[in-house]
Image (cartoon, rainbow, N blue to C red; front, side):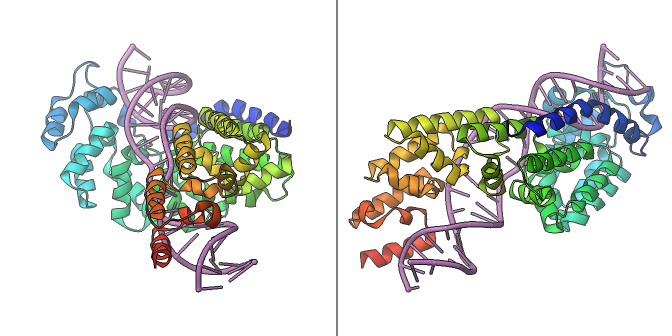
Length: 375
DNA sequence: TATACCGGGCTCTGCCATCCCG
DNA sequence: CGGGATGGCAGAGCCCGGTATA
């Protein structure tokens, strides 16, 4: 209902997705990244593996079985650039084992030319500065680095994200934490941004650009989620929490943004089980909703974790009302809560009288506090 | 000056489906 | 029809400390 205007637009966006991709694919393929030699010459007789390549990879320590499972086609190519790729990565500081692991997990890496890699590295360097930072990411997620052969698109993305007002430090965080953002087609990122602006406007916000900045810096994973998912999450939260448009906007400006990237089923499940658990403890529906609105990140907790944590707190004689008032105790792990409760019981700490704030202090502050209390 | 409040730092890949192209 | 490029999905929190505030 509240997202009325938005649904039309985003439907349109989804519909346009195909024609967009089509259009840009044509542009992309004409880029120098996909050389003419990609014709038949590149492949062997369609069933036979390139034994030179296989031997080389085996010798390097690549898990060839894994390669066969993941991208069997790569092994059949006659023209690949494995030696140059390996050399390139080693020059950048990757160990032999690391390189082998990278190729095992994303075999298509060996199809990239030296020029391509050189260029891509330069572009990444414009954001990340040091080789070791880049290698770290490539090692963690080879696919993000190697999946696209389109460096022009990569540059488009950087240009686009900067144009939104994201600062170099934001881009750095984005590239480190969600590298896939940069191998997305830039149209896909634009689509998400348009969608978020629509959300802002349809909820009565007046500065969509600022909203987008806020939300994207708060949740760096949004750009690698589908608009479909984010839209479903927003709609679900509004309905479940019974929020007016303005209230929803406020929520999304704050902690609400944190949970938008979760899978919709997960959010629904967690909302449902949190509600059930709290109501079973005598909370009203209103209590539940106020609790979730005051600190949406509790929805990150799996329902088991949520329940365990509540039970753990209750067992120590803490009242459920105290938890509702201090939702951020839910930030503290069950392990930390348990050990702190044990320490506090030893010195006769009374949660009813002195409150539960002590449970979500930083370790340093907790120790200091504990020392003071026991003297 | 001891809490409360709050923002921010870590962190997130690896697989499968679908598309288009030669 | 096989392969490359791309989109999308499931998976599932905790901690620190600056600063306002009482």
